[in-house]
Amino acid sequence: MRRGQTPQGFLLETIREAYKLAIEKDRRNFTCDCGVVRAMLPHIKIATTDGTDSNQKVTHTMDLFTIEKMLQARSNSFRFDPTLLKNLKGKNIIIFGGSSGIGKAIHDLATLNGARAFSASRTQNGIDISKRETIEAFLSSVIDSVGKIDIVINTAALLIKKPLEKTSPEEINAIISTNYLGMINIALSAHKFLKESKGTLLNFTSSSYTRGRAYYSLYSSTKSAAVNFTQALADEWSKDAIRVNCINPERTQTPMRVTNFGLEDPSLLLKAEDVAETSLLVALMRKTGMIVDIKKEGALLI
Image (tube, rainbow, N blue to C red; front, side, top):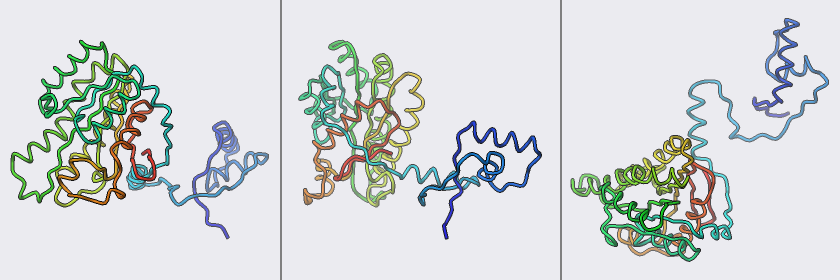
């Protein structure tokens, strides 16, 4: 006994010829494509192969919805070659949120591998990503200095861990302005420069984007927005040869995490340096629209 799955595959010319003959001979009593090929082209060998539970059949509209969610959740192991970091040499890289945590680790690693890295943050040089004019002034100064921008990375984020009803209007505005509006401002400001260089925009999300977490509902929802924004922009900007990808790191040892969660066992956390390495390798990829999970066991592509 075998449990069969519906999906069947044929070379286009084979299935086209089989149906052409069936129409010519007015043969209509078939249950599937395989039956048409077996009857009309008996010389074609047909075989079965091992299937998988994730190989779903699309019959109804609801099936499309289910499969789309499954594809969003599916990750395939992807190994990055650290030696490719040498390709950073000569690149001009902007890092928003580059004064601490993952952003600083990216800045330091990029510089170590021969890139010209420029960090921007409120604490470092007064760049407030909720105000587009400060971003544009900073990017223009980099252009005046080095002539082009190859990669723009946005690691800037604000997490305030408390119940929503205890979050002040000022705090709500700060989270949304930094995590969501700031992401939009960076993209809008960087577009013309990345179009000229055929460069890369790299956003950051959080593992909380897949399911909203209590006490940081605003952070979780803005990080979900980062994923959708990245995928939409990747489609829009493909005509300009701009790649737009997104990094999704697991819990990472950063000052922002310590502020909100206190001291934790470091063996359970990613190191900012490891996230930085994968992030820069993703920034060098030719792919676009990718959401790259970074876990302690390695990187995963969605």
